[in-house]
Length: 166
Image (cartoon, rainbow, N blue to C red; front, side, top):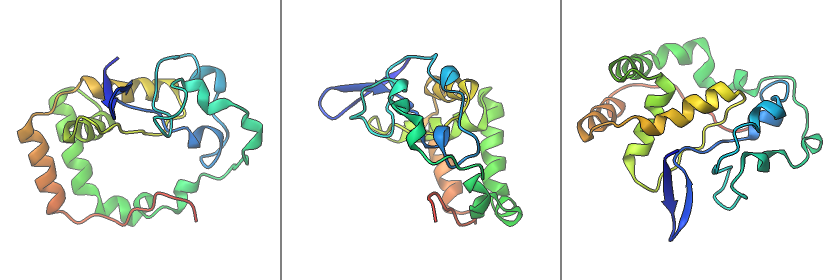
């Protein structure tokens, strides 16, 4: 697994794991057993976590069990938002085909290419998605490809984005 150094000498995985959706906010809780099978050093919310995926699961009973998916209230997931983001989605899907990757991997690879101290922490609820996300660290985008994506982002209209709770 590729790693990065944060600060002076904190070694972490190049791609982290956001755990919020595993226990609440995105429907039924994730399968704890499945998500803890891959015991590797992760950035979990913060590089100060104990470094293992299991740090997400101290006691899941303490979290509110939210059966509704909060993403349904986010503007980027509405019909209008998807239409407004069509150019961005097309760009990322095209780059993914060129690189034999998934759109999620291209998005993460773009973030990783920005600076050596950036560690994206995407949320995931399934082991297969976690493994897909980790694969982003294996995708090398050239400076020209990063510049192409940056330029496109600077010149396209996109929907509002809401990333928190109301």
